[in-house]
Length: 424
Image 1 (cartoon, one colour):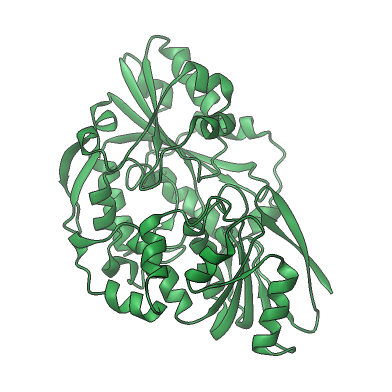
Image 2 (image 1 turned 90 degrees about the vertical axis):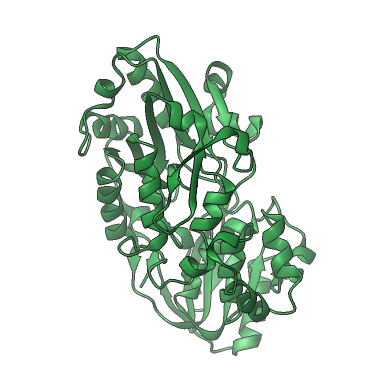
């Protein structure tokens, strides 16, 4: 037996895979990447050496106000490390500047106060102005223009009216935007629901270029980059983290150039060769990314890339916060089959995109080809079953069922952290 640690909620499951079945364990090199510097030193070094941009301190001198876009509760950005450094450096040269922290919720629900405290720390929550972006509050939006794709670009007024707009985030492979970070702080981060849905249309989601690790010719990325430029995103701080959510590198400066350099670094660590197997095992990297099923589709796409058609995907994900989107749930649960979902969604026009359509389109694509067994003892099993998946309370139960489906000699590939790799 081979023992493998798989992140699950705020802990790890140590599972055993029979040696006769195991073909490969696919992991990002980021998890073994060693750094001697502290997280604070890594961040400060990046800020001291910005890429394609003046230093942050130069950008904020003499300015009256600044908006700092940060990630929401679904993203493991280590803001307890990064935010204090950013705020300190800004106020060191401009003590009177008016700073607003804008949470890039995108199409997600607002971040609660408890989640803010957990993410930012009590001191920042008590002393800073923190505002949730609400994508469906059109009174808080301003028309900025038209996306390259033709969709209307509506962005948060606070971001657009700021004298200086900066953002923090992290870079990891993203299942249809290529990589997270950079321009995603603006679109979908602080964009209207209408803009997000146009960008996430079925045509783009179906594109061969809208895949993990791909930016070139990616229609979703092209829209996002345009939005960031229209918003005049002046400076970014993007970090790269390991499996313990610790910072191993940081990239600061121009919103496009610094992001591209960060993506190259991540790609060097994250790219793994697909090892096709009858059974593929994946996770969503644990908390906070595995809080709901909506986010967990990301980890499934890594398994999709290495599982044989007709195979079984075992997805380890807590989903303690439920499905993560009512439209996402309804469109899968109310369909007779995943194929029905795919046939329906491909006919939906770019500007008629449904809420959560991108997520249920990708999930349906996976369910149409594979049997998915979701492992969780923290969610409602009936919810999983209604969404055309099987449920297992333990990993052992899921593996036993998968081997019954594919045979006791079925081959297995394990991806302990599905959101950290680009499977090619």
